Image (cartoon, rainbow, N blue to C red; front, side, top):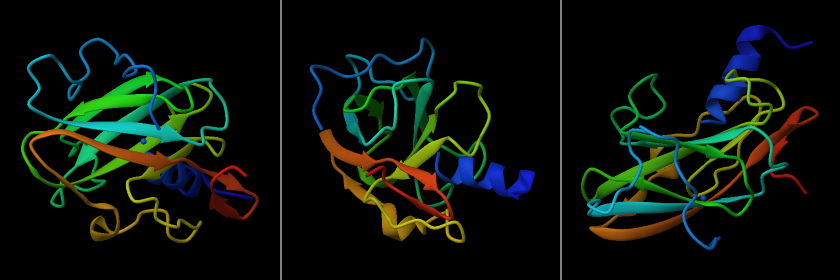
Length: 163
């Protein structure tokens, strides 16, 4: 049986992007959502969501704040939809990582059924849910950039994409 700390870690670490007709609409007031004035943007396509329930949160990090509570540089929340592309504003060119969390039941808490992923799709396990920044960082240049994140979910005693 899993304890609460382990369940919270799993959901938070998995928090913690294919082309859609257009970017998914962000929640009003999302810090990090793109606007017409956004100069540097990252189009994150979500691949492998197990269902279209709940919400998906896309968070942008630099190396200094990677996966630290409240240290994201931008965060966008959208309804869950496999294949959706989310636009997130990037402060300037540099190396960044994206952490994605699928709150599958939409309750705002990290649960065992939630999923997540990171840029560069690192292999995750129940003992290594938080990858190193260097393994997930991608270069972002001025203008529009693209990345795909494959979602991972708990499957018994392992963590991985839905097959």
